[in-house]
Amino acid sequence: MSLFANCACGRHGSQAEHDSDERIVEEAVLRAAIPDGALRRRLLQAVGASTALAALSAVFPLGAAKEAFAQGGGKLEKTKLKVGFIPITCATPIIMAQPMGFYSKHGLDVEVVKTAGWAVVRDKTLNKEYDAAHMLSPMPLAITLGAGASAVPYTMPAVENINGQAITLAMKHKDRRDPKTWKGFKFAVPFDYSMHNYLLRYYVAEHGLDPDRDIQIRSVPPPEMVANLRADNIDGFLAPDPVNQRAVYDGVGFIHALSKEIWDGHPCCAFAASKEFVTTMPNTYRALLKAILDATAYARNAGNRKEIAAAIAPANYLNQPVTVVEQVLTGTFADGLGNVRKVPDRIDFDPFPWHSFAVWILTQMKRWGQLKGEVDYQSVAREVFLATDAARLMAEVGLTPPKSTYKSFSVMGRAFDPMKPKEYVASFPIKRA
Image 1 (cartoon, rainbow, N blue to C red):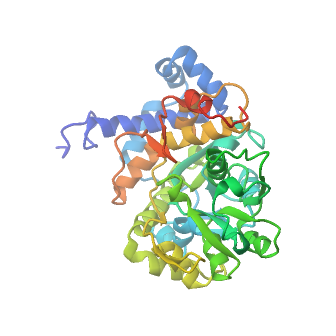
Image 2 (cartoon, rainbow, N blue to C red):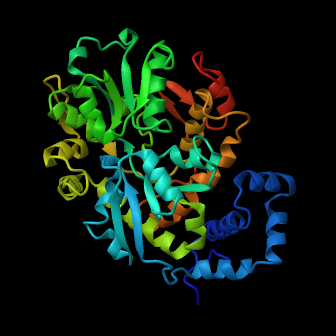
Image 3 (cartoon, rainbow, N blue to C red):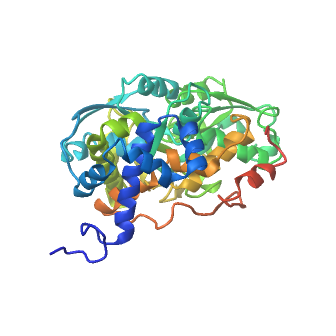
């Protein structure tokens, strides 16, 4: 007799969980059958999901696939994997999962590969040199939509970290804290398609500066930012950590503002993989995602942060003094202005890929001219940010997933309604759209 009374198949704790699993299989089959995301969306809009799935059932054993998924497990299609990362604390779960045994716990032999910059990460994953990668959370959206590169269907099943960035200025600017005085400043961000770029643009625009006319913004790989600040090539940067803390440690910069002061709880980096990897290696994908979620759950516990700092500081990972990494992860840090601040959630780890995060990112891509034409915000968010996969596996590693995939929030006091993205874009006086 089944232990569960509230599910059609008898294997789930509720009918909602049963339906969620069925949707995972249906979405995976549709993605595999029609890889072109735009074409798939048009088809679904034209005939509806039920009709499309009924047609697919005639040529694909959809019922058997659902049955196999419900039973779980299955042999890993591949156990030796390469996952690329940039040496920043945003990649903490992906990095720590190697030395701390989270990958091996789930049957995987993962080589985490330090990579020079985001364009290299993107290209190596597209060329299949990496099976999956640490990416900036906007990158899977940009890759899927063909912004900055050829369109390839990509996914983001987990956020790597929330918060964890800061605006750092050169020491010579310690008396220029008002952004209205920053005209002519040269800033670095890690990549055009990054939360860093969008948050810096948002921040200066809210203070009346046009980020394309009043300041200069250039892309610089995070490992090169402090050297550029020291050489006076830039006036500051909005960067991931530990770059900001290293500038303080080296005495060349001070922390002007933490990114959580712009938007508390914003996504930063992500675990990303191609839709091809997700659909052709479902068991390996599941094991890899579960290992990373398992590591994320461990990283959420503040009591584990010093242990993690010691594990990821060495040269083959972050190549930073342990004290620099500890200051970031524990939130007790020197700000470069003679103060020791205590901000426990300076960086935090919450893996859920909220669809509302994706919609906000898309509004900023639209606002600054990176996307042309009409954007189906909610559809793209659902296609790329795999909230259903994350929710299912979060529960298995002791995390509590939210019941909805959308939430409202505020950025610098301006409320964001993810159901009204067009109105949000139109509301900004400074924009390219």
